[in-house]
Picture (cartoon, helix red, strand yellow):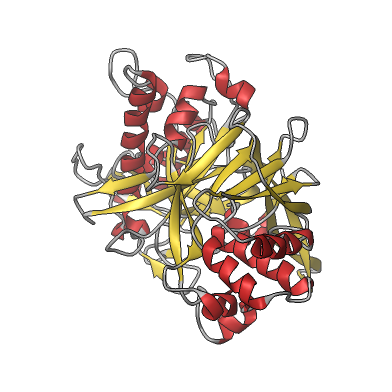
Length: 490
């Protein structure tokens, strides 16, 4: 057995997964096997590149995906509006950057253990590896100060979370994929791939290092939950306040990421999977709030049940992730059920499985002007009444949107309904027609009602998320801030 102890000196771990942007809010926890190999390789260079043949042999053996013992931790982030050095409308121009991190329980120890249980090294190889570890000062971004050392024994799993490859263990927890070395990448080729800089890789027009592969780890069901909160037994009373949970949706086994025009399909799938996991975990029927049902089984009145909101973060017209918004908070059982869903099975339109990764709880956005990100489904068709000069419109789109805002408890606003032909803009150019979105649920077929796009102008800043209209709980009727100029931190 080979084990490395990683002590996080500041009690935090900052690092983005390989395929995630800074503003996605995801953190590379547990650290990817590739990250560990790169850190060890960097330590070898700093140590003066001792015993190259012995180091290459040790590196080959450590290329096997390790298992982890991780301390208790929770996710967090801070928001920074970074100056761009330019101005717009007389004001300094800024861009929003999220600094996502893992906060470790320093009172109980902020040390993690990386373990290769089936790997043995010669005394010389162990000395080289120990020397490499002693030259590592951070893991991930430079804020993640750490010390590393080779240890002969690891503590018991009491107080630590054991995480291993999904192929080695079974469980109900979610899975997460991390970058590792492929089976064919060994020797000088492995060292060369680990030594390649991001700039060199981009210059070669590659998104991943040569020879790498994705490995899946199985996470505990209480991953990133505070232990004291997880062990509390409240089942009916919400113990979390208004909560916005974020998930990243990966491409399927055989198909690319689904179209944002099918947002309602994947919102339904996540809702159904959450209800199923609730029943599994609790051994009984799901909660009425999670199912959106009243005591008699009818549709729940009001809007205290969760919204399932697929979003297109990259502006490519694809679903990059799904937000689950609990406006009235949730219980631990509901939180566990939603965050335990490892993948979405869609058999009607895509016939594929789409891995789902729980990113964590994210901060709500606050803005003064909001515009449609998915079309808003009206309650009724607008109608003309009267004759000749007395003709007037009844149930106009503006009137219906105002009524929806009142029912949802949203502050009054000026409603600007988009003219025919204006679509939902994509970040990479072009637009999506509002009438091109699917707007009927799978098991509740109904004649499609009219849809519109709109912009809401408020007198003051209001908190999101904002979702209005029929099917608002299934991804339609979503609004996002018009621009960063209309947005500010909460």
